[in-house]
Image (tube, rainbow, N blue to C red; front, side, top):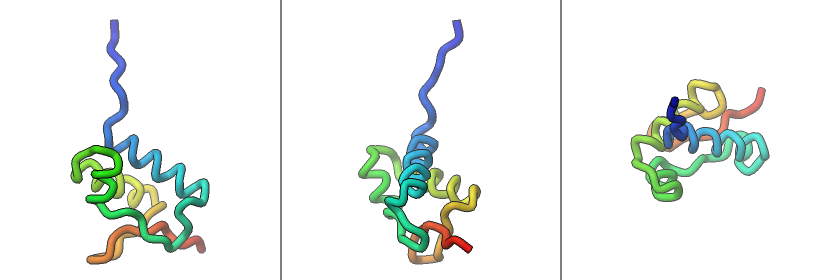
Amino acid sequence: MRRIYPPAAYKRVALLLREHIEAGLYRPGEKLPTITELAELHDIKPGASFEALLLLVAEGIVVPRRGDGYYVKETA
C-alpha cells in the first residue's frame, strides 16, 4: 500500500499566497509579509517561508526587492 504524504510546508504556503493574490487580497505592487511573519503566521520554519516566496518568484507572480522584501508583480 502506497502512503500519501501532505504537501511540503513551503508548497502549502505558496499555494495560499497564490490564491490570495489571484483573489485580490494582495494587489499588484503590494508588499507581502516578511519571511519571519510568514513563518510565524503559518507555524513553519523561516526557510520554508523563504522557499515559498522563491517558488512564486520563479512562477513570475512575485518580485524581490533587495533589502525591502517581496512584492506582487505589477501587471503590464
